[in-house]
Image (cartoon, helix red, strand yellow):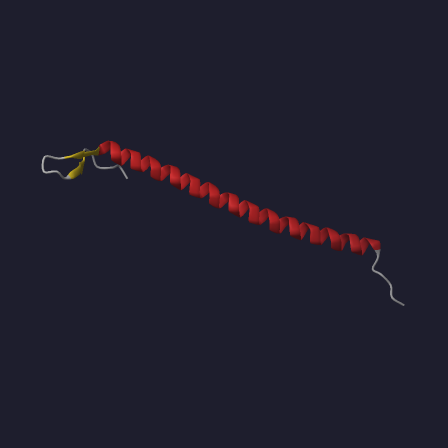
Length: 73
């Protein structure tokens, strides 16, 4: 006799597999969103630093590029 597992066992197994797949998908998606957010924030901070440096730059009488004021950080 070849008995199939009970309906309860099959539903639990299907639910477990479904939860596992959803968890894997969610973790991959959240990881990618975190990387994108961190990269965008870094790009924004670097752009602000560049604008600050450019606003402080000037050419001295010797033709050298100097900063009017040292950066805070």
